[in-house]
Length: 109
Length: 115
Image 1 (cartoon, rainbow over the protein chains, first blue to last red):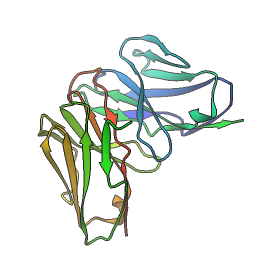
Image 2: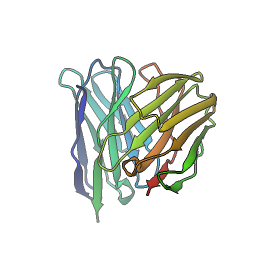
Image 3: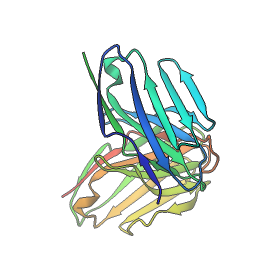
Image 4: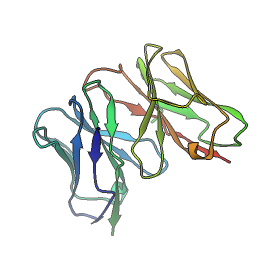
């Protein structure tokens, strides 16, 4: 079966750095996505990785290791508005997105 | 963000009712999707339309019936639902349904409660 694992919940402090991990086992791989979803709102696209390595976009970075079936989302200089759920998703060999259950990130002052 | 809109935002219905959810995208995309999101569960893909043709139906019960009259509009017709169908129903669109980098853009969802 296909599976995406990510922690259910994480807590971090405003101004700090947090890393949200995602491991996957899928039939084929055509890229990995990270989305942010605030409570009651639409998921919004954050990043896409298809090659190994780190992609940096402002305060957010995403890393991929295809050989390990592993990715992480790194959030720097945390702000209260970063409190949200972060969803990891992988496109399989049929180009269908397989989703993790999401990581709820709580930011404390 | 008004790229993908959904109506209604909230819906309460009885098990014998018939209702429809509407989704509209203003992004010029050719693929549209319905997802179900339940608390603490991964998004479940329900239906995919690519160029108005249904390409995926992930074993969804027949009490959910999709309709895609054109590439900009998508409906989900609901009838004789069960309480376990209560969830957030999300619509998304993308340029097309294949292609690795093709990114899906989501609407705000319809919060459905079945009594």
